[in-house]
Length: 495
Image 1: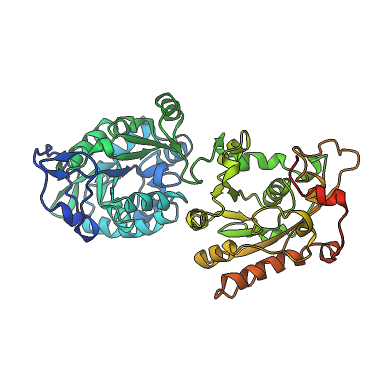
Image 2: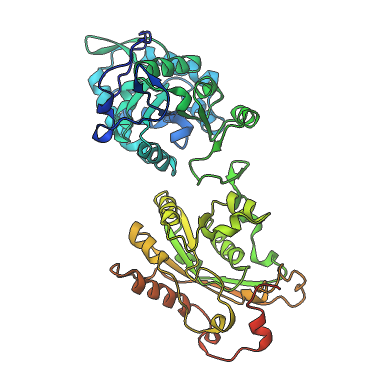
């Protein structure tokens, strides 16, 4: 790891280290930020480990691996109860007192053996990382910030994990070593609470890092000192006390198991919270018939591609996804992010804005990020509701974004055919027809098996997707006919 980590007992040095350019790709040192003795000061992104990068704590995994590797055959009394409490409510003094006393239990362990166990732990921890953690790390890496892991977890156990993720340095508790074995003591400071902030400040001074331009991420109220030391603190999956403090100080709140901006209620993101209430039989003004939803994988990335007939389509799609208990990240035109009320809704569900006509690939990259995190992305390839006679054309035509995204990510494309949604909320109406409770129109939402894509041509694969969607529609959808003047009028916005 390129930057220099001070020992836990070392005081900050006044002079910056030499060789700044060696840290950055191609030897390029950023020119932005404060300067120290003529050098451009760098910025960093500092991450806590448990319940921040990880879904829960690392303790149970570390304990199992140490037993499997023969490092120890015993556990610290009461640790299972504390692990359970920690996962649900966050860091507490009792668990930290136990962690600090844990050094005594390591007396006699061979340091080399523990480091070998750390390599296995690194692999296991990859499986419990928050889905969007990798994207957050990648963002800071692209912006040439140093990545630092700051954790109470012992250095020898966690350094391989940090190295595997490309961290530049690790600030962690170190155990005393004598003749190649731990001696039951802590070498320097126990890296927790105020000492974690002090360690970050010492590291920043030695490595010429401007904390005012740096970021820090944590879930714990006990990391408030560290968060307060940087210019850009971020509360991640915050415990109750940190959540209140973050609101008071207007710190951003993130959940790395969901896209930025997604709202959570009682620990559940908005869509999952709403799913129990999204039963088709409770939808009084529409007779929504959902079938084929078992084609949507129960987990892992998937692209749901649907035709577009009315403003009711997103709700019908949402009800379909609820059948599989899977939130969807909709690609939505940017105008929805600017409209009153609707912009709040599309934001809290993690919708991805699309700037039509801009030629930007940013929406596709955001969608690819979501798929990499194992999410469901919803695309309506037609882009907008067809108007006039095009609305009644039996042939569905789509834009190539859905195929390009599938080619980029390898995610399966699940077709969804909607029919009858225009009778619930036609384009000509400002509101759904809520009063259709006595004779609710029938709406069908039918999913099919994954579309077989060739992968050589986005245009040809888009036609395959649109054909698969068309095959899911009733026979009336395939019959060409002359619409009435009233039907044509219903396909245009009001006014």
